Length: 152
Image (tube, rainbow, N blue to C red):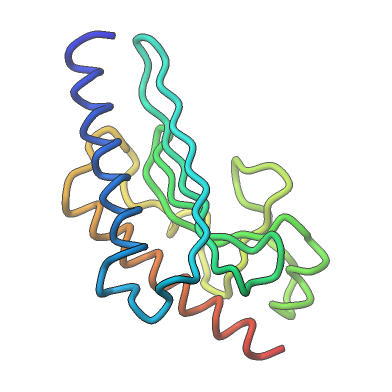
């Protein structure tokens, strides 16, 4: 791994560790404390960009409802459900497939989700500002999902 790729991977990984720590311990997420389930996957390959995924959910949510914070090429955050019919039932609208995520559907009533999920198109440039934006998007999705589920 070149020094530049390693430094970028270390910075991105550190930012994702910060996001995970804030979810479990930060004031921004205190009303959900003790309810989080987070699945973390980091993929580092020789001479390649790091890929990071956090699949975040509350234990009380229906199976399959999650929020994904990711850095592949781009950096982004979106809410999803892997069951098209359940998604339509909860949202009362036609399920919209998540671009680039097979068999996943946006679990959100927000519009322009293919574009609005992005925090940064060049995820390797992730800095503190983008890390904070990820946290804000995660919180917005937590609140929206809570509203959607409370309507049932």
